Image (tube, rainbow, N blue to C red; front, top):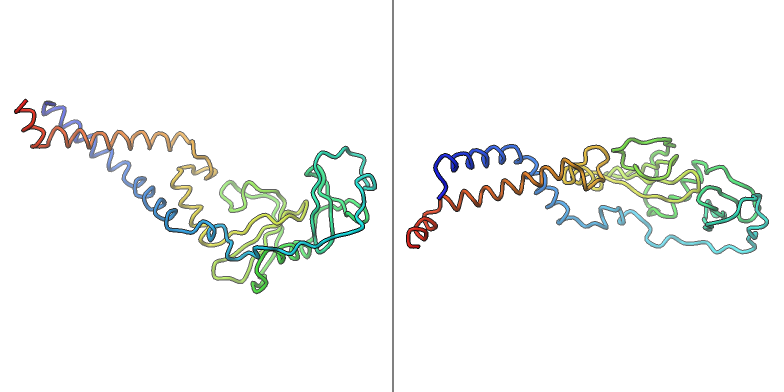
Length: 234
């Protein structure tokens, strides 16, 4: 059996590790419960979206050789902006597919029309603004900039985002998503960008958590009357 001095040291280590890790264990539990009890489609904001936005059919479009561009084409996508067709070429240039003219980004009014194709028609727009940059914790982080942020008159503080460069609808954000995002940060312990699941801090706390659990098993083993009785019989 473990001597009394060693047992006392294990108890002390277990107690202080428990105090040190307790808050993080609580956050892991709370965030895990939230993740398991919420509908991920609702977190993505599907309840605010028009699930099947109507795609306009276009005819009499120009060939790529008729565009006002001499650059070789690697990628090409047909986009609809304010009911007009546009070619998004090489993920860098936007051209009107009927006139061939290059377009330098979209206007607020065009962004509003793009958003209306994807958002439920009964939702009213409260404000729209152009954002040039965002921080690491911003809800629109990691997506194309500049962009238009379109706010809606909803209790959930719904916002939609449309890229300025090509008029592509990006995403929606709302109150439940923001709670999810905050709890995700506490779960991954990435307090810089929120999205890194391999942080040194998380690995350290995971290792300390394992040590805490193992020390609890050791304490049970060395203090259990049943284990002592079995050892005496051997």
